[in-house]
Length: 219
Image (cartoon, rainbow, N blue to C red; front, top):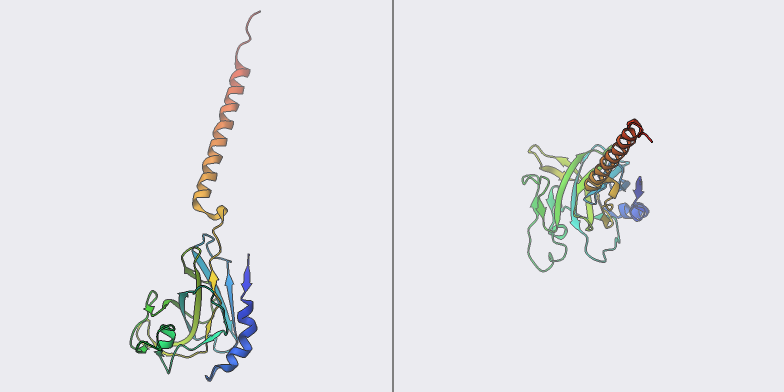
């Protein structure tokens, strides 16, 4: 299986980006889920993306488990209020209206891979649009959504001067099911079986040779 386009994401791209009120709101994203070059063990998921504007900028990748019945109404999502201030509405989408939460300024607070920001986990960052898939290790059978956010790095590691937008959210995605041919235990069984077959064949050949070389009995 090669590239599987996220048809819903692509179909909504023009309309959704036109609604993003940012200087580069006309950026057109193509985001794809891919199995090419990704371990087929049910634990890994691969993403690729391209942009027609600003492709050299850094992209920060966030992940969350998708809620049951999640449907993508738009492929754009608001992540920051201004500059690098990640808003509570992004981090706590279910409770920000009833519980006070403060914005996080990631220009001073590092967010390395593994950082938890509300319901979202930072899974990494990539400078530019990747030539090879960005591979994320996930739980088998779990369904995830990803948010890709254009960013400008700050001086300190894992900090960002700005998260520039427009950010893109994917439909719910799931890692490809493990393939028996690629599973290590199955490969080990095949190798052991091959050794058994070779041993049996060698035994049969030795028996036949021994029989052929046995002196004939006198009548």
